Image 1 (tube, rainbow, N blue to C red):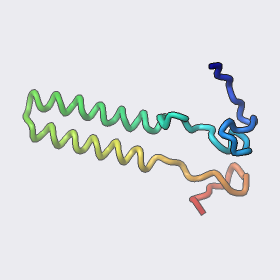
Image 2: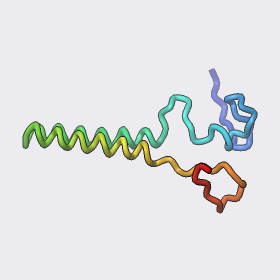
Image 3: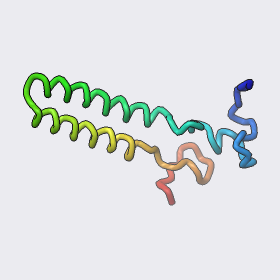
Length: 98
């Protein structure tokens, strides 16, 4: 199977009929994108710190750090979507979903 690079102005390979830049650019077919990767990294760091605390300080501190890390990762994933760019086509205009 050969993978060819899709340019921004090519038709989108998903079959929507839109240009790639207006459809699937910035998304991942597997669902794993940069936003998800950063959220997983935050959770992973929290788990490592939690394991270190469990070994040195105790279970309560480890549970607290793991919970805070999970909340931070979830908040990052949930609240880092930029505003929608659909609208007038003016790159200076910001649409807040309206």
